[in-house]
Length: 330
Image (spheres, rainbow, N blue to C red):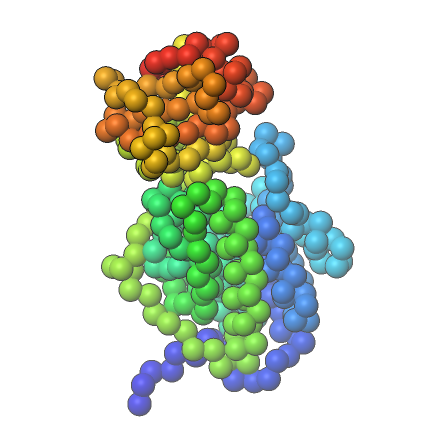
């Protein structure tokens, strides 16, 4: 007889008395919390984050959604581990869910869920375990990613898989565009998996971590362009950190030039007729529709959207500020 791989809990019909404590933030948090509300689960507690006033908040609010439905909210920044454990224990959860919550939950918290703890991750596990998986997938030029609902265990993103869905990544898509698709996939994955989680019938899939990868977080300074790379690699960095993320940047003549959108130049007639004698050079020829970049290997980029000192910088303004080139960015 094969081992029982059903989700924890006795096989029973959907039960409005099922209780879930939810740790959530960001758009995925909002959309997935709404799925639980729509399913009629009892939600005695939502734990979320206070918004950082220094951060560009471009996403929906979990706290606001919970408040509209009369769900008690606690903020992670107000709770040490003991207080958090006490709050979760008092809620008596059947399930704990984590939807883009920014902290890893300790095992002592996970064990308070009578029927299991589950996280929604923004990749096709076991690939891109860890932090900011959508940005990493775009940075590495992947053609797809997705959303995966999985059990939470001591090791990050390593538990059994309860459901997943792939989404495409186009060669010019930004991380924000891909994240919007992942958010939709996350909602659909949870809607499909939830009935089986509640009644105990859902079959879970073990992960083979040897087939995957793990990545850490990214910082704004990781957006610095390395002009020794080829055009495609620089293009992938630009779209991986394009707004609303902090953006890719280069130092040019003592100023910080932000590069928000690029295109790899693949048509020979469009490519500036000059090779880079150093790691890279920038050009703004008379009559050009965009600033051009010649990379160290001779591949070329069109720099389609630039900013300087927080203001958009067109090709004419670029030429006035820096000249027409060749210019050597740092």
